[in-house]
Length: 129
Image (cartoon, rainbow, N blue to C red):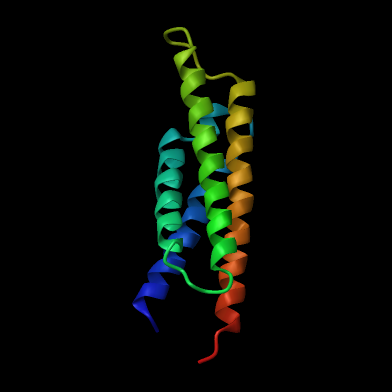
């Protein structure tokens, strides 16, 4: 068992689980979606992307592409959140429409992360001992 492969798989699966944790809940309810969880999902997703640059496997380019898509989607979600908060009156809360947009972007990232994990499982299953 390679510690490097274990760490690689750990980070990829962690990126997915943090993303799922953020997305789960009513799509338009700000109380169900934590900004810290989105921040952590972005950080771990970026780490996973950097780790995929070193992957020389046949599926490596596709895994890198899925990771880049997840990064773009999560950063877009954070950007929408930042703009929405900047436009709020003092003491006001995010609206349902803004939160639905943020969660929609994060859901797109989640789909990309699911594809990445599926590719990881396929690559692992195809490896010979």
